Length: 101
Image: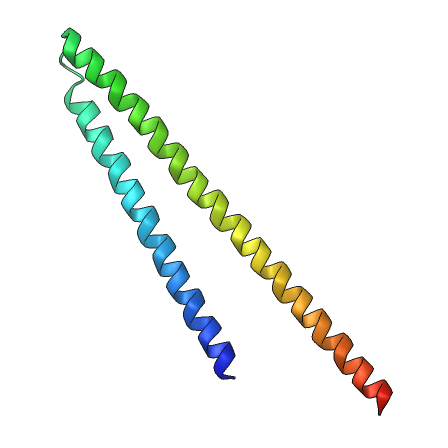
């Protein structure tokens, strides 16, 4: 029972860490988009170069955010499979134990 509670606490912390990371990534993207919007009226060469740089940074930040979601999804699927395997093994161990009795 204590191990189950520890697993729950670990899962809660993992979720909190993931949500915090996603919020930070989304904030960074929003900051870059604000900078890009501020340069929209400026047509100078330096502003065009800065816009291109910001657009590249935004694309990179969005790709990193998508990767975070993908990694989280894969991790969750692996955890579910591990739990399913554990339950199956426990069930089979109990069957064997019952047969031995």
